[in-house]
Image (cartoon, rainbow, N blue to C red; front, side, top):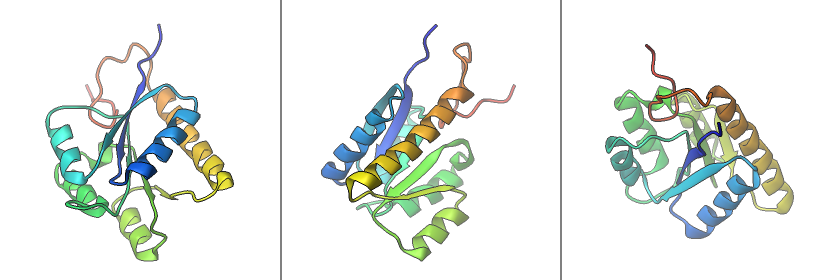
Length: 152
């Protein structure tokens, strides 16, 4: 029995960056469906509608609702701990890194600028997606947003 593709939610306001990040996800070789949403408000609506995701790749600097505000809303909704979130941003600010770490997010990547950095970032994404893939067996019927298992 084959497994369903991972549901990757790409939260990025810049179309060129979204295209590059989407290509890096495809280059991981892990079967996935990528949904591109442009800001945090749209993500909240998507999740409130009952849509599930396996991983969120999140930019911090976006209009309307930025990544920090989205993380706060997800925490307030009591689902942040159930989600796998990769922050991928252009910000190398120590303050941004600290805020993300305090929100409980362990993966903070700077958007790659060159070919070598893209290859390294793709390798990190591959590792994360393969780890997620190994957490789910084909017989596992139910997941909550973020792919976390529902406790019985």
